[in-house]
Length: 248
Image (cartoon, rainbow, N blue to C red; front, side, top):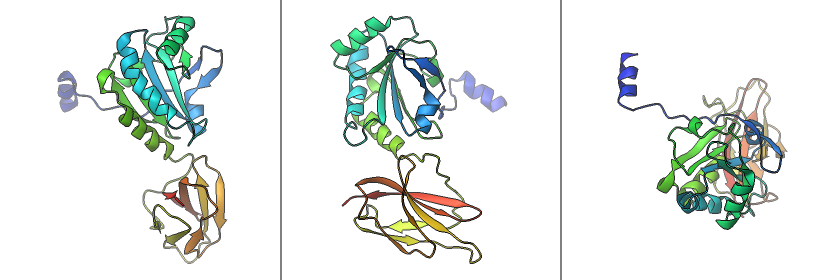
C-alpha cells in the first residue's frame, strides 16, 4: 500500500484495459448500449472532439482507418464522434463532421459518454473498443493518434473471441497448421480417452460454419471465404479455441 501511494504521488497509475459501459441516444435519436454492441461483435471507435482545427487534424486519421473496413467487415466497425462534455448541439457536431470530411460519423451530444473514463483528458481522444471482454485496444490523444495505429487496433479487435471459451490452461494442447490455410487445416490435440469431443469452425460473428466429430486430424476449409476464424474443441467438461486465417 505504501509503494502504491508513492507511485500514485509520482504520477504513475495502472492502465485501464476495460471499456466503461454507457447507454446513450445518438444525434438521430437511436439508443446505443456499448456493451451490447461489443457483445454482438461490433468494434467501436470513439473520437471525443469539439469543433476545432486540431480535432479535425488528428481525428480524421482515425475516421479514415475505420472506413478501410467498410468492404471487408461491412457493418461491424463504427466511428462514434462524441462531444467533449455533452454541451455542443447535435446540429453543430453534424455540420462540423461533414465540413471536416467525416460524414459517416455517428454523432453524440451526451454527457453519458465520458472521456475521463479513459485517462488523459484532451481533444481529440480516440479509443478502439472490441470483444466480449470489452477490451480497450487503443487509447491516444492529439498528435499521438495515427492511421496505422488505429487500423492495427481495429484488426486486433476484430480477432477478439465473441463468447467463445478459451481455456488458457491448454487442456487439449490444441494446435493447427498451416496458418494462413488454403484448403486443408491440419489439427493436433490430446484427449482423455473416456471423453467424447467435437470440433467446430466458428466465424468472427460466433456462427458455427463447420462441425466435425472426434478423432479429426484434418478439416477441409476450402468452402470458407477468406477471413479470420476460430477452431474450437469441446468435451463434456471443457473447451478450447485458437484463431486461424483462411486465405485461398
